[in-house]
Each structure stands twice: as structure tokens, then as C-alpha cells.
Length: 123
Image 1 (cartoon, rainbow, N blue to C red):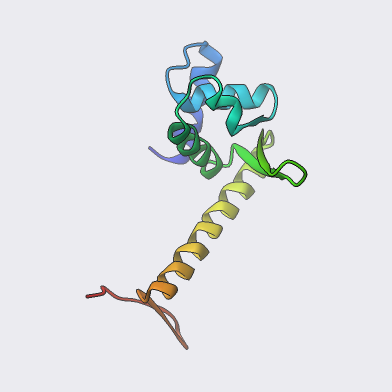
Image 2 (cartoon, rainbow, N blue to C red):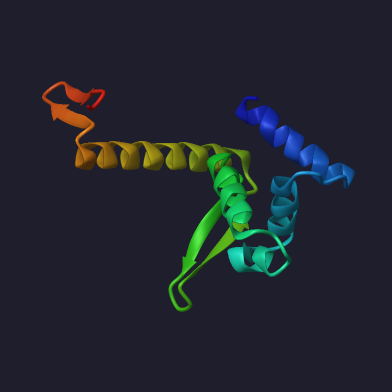
């Protein structure tokens, strides 16, 4: 399912009130007001489920994570404007790409050349 269909499906669940997916439940709560990961865990959602769904919503460009410097926790908020969602989606995609390359170089699976990057299979 492409990105726009995933987003449409989430909003259809929210608007219908039949929020069957964890992603829709989490997004609905964040739309109402910014939330922390701990908020959802305190409401009997599994930590691993919440982190995975928050990551998915970030990848879709629907939410952004802000670090609270005083309390060292993340606050997730809804990105309202579609243009800002697209920008956030592209930024997350590029950050993940850069992290993939960095880890690949560190582990020896990627080498840099004068022409860019060279990926190879390993042992």
C-alpha cells in the first residue's frame, strides 16, 4: 500500500470512530494533543508496539518527535499541513538512508569510492 493510501486509511478509521489499528489509536491521541511514549505505555500498550507505531507514523510524516531537554524524554506532535508532512517524510527517509550508509561503512559492507558508494555481499 502506498503512502497516501496508508494515510487515508488511518484517517478513515479515526473519522469513523472504528479505530482498529494501534497506529490509528496512537495518531488520534496525538492529534488531540502532543503525547509521550510513556503516555501510551501507561495505558497498557506494549512498549515495543508503541515504539514501532510511532516510528511508522514518523515515516509517514504525520508526527514529529521533539526532545524535551529538561526531562530527557520525547514528545510526539501531529504535523497538520500536508506540505510539512511531505517535508518530514523526506527528511526521515534521508536520515535513515544516511544511518544505513554509516553503519554499512562501519561494518565493512559498504565502501566509498570516488564515484560514490559500493555495496558488496560480505563473507
